[in-house]
Image (tube, rainbow, N blue to C red; front, side, top):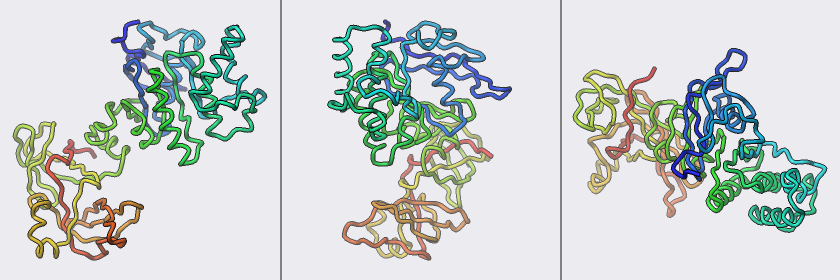
Length: 375
């Protein structure tokens, strides 16, 4: 086993169903022992990738390799890979012990070994004492744990997870996210998760692959995906975002001088632009600072934390309560609506801003993302 070799490699893989592209020229390396999540909306091709890795589908073009070996034409049962499905696919006529032991019984392992391995698998998923319980009498979260134990008992090289948490309620889903992450760290097995839930992907993964229309839009750490989206699709899919149209005036190394909503300011960028190029400025709501024009005029100390050099004026349209935070919707004087996230003052349970307030919106240089213009 070569630990430096990717455990899974997809090389220019395409898949066509009834003349329609499900995947088009997808290449992906999955590192040994990592938790990788494939993120995207329904129909983007993420489950097709999982099925190609598992061997349930054969690519129309390209190759699939596992542990350095081409397995493109290899049957699923010969791939040392297990899958946990959204439906769990448990045997309803069997109890917990027999469900988990099924794979070992098929391999005709000794009874004592089966008993020992099942006990260990159930301990890992915190289901000790449930051996004789029928799976139909278990909760959704418990059934999911049985499915995971059954998949892990064979010590697969890779565990595939096809939206396994989508049927659970919010609180249980959050707990299972933590449990899965801790289990993966403990076992060191490569996990590949498919989900449409951005928060789930970010909370569990070492790396995230964002997909759209059968192609990879971006891959990287959760932080890099969120803070440095490579295009508008990724920016919009992985969280709330403010998008402002702007024009480049000039560019120096690593910075561009742009005109946006009446503001003329330098902004950091990795892209190269020419004077006159149209661009998009991306700002997350939590990166914006809002102050009333009245307070800015009356409190000189605000100058220390509020940048007039990169501020846009507007009028508050509404505030939206979100628990620990609230959003302030500001209609800029040039007509664009932006959202800023504010934290509640613990000493004052009321929101600070009111509809009709005249405000300025600012941010720290470098917190913006400058992208080429997209129609």
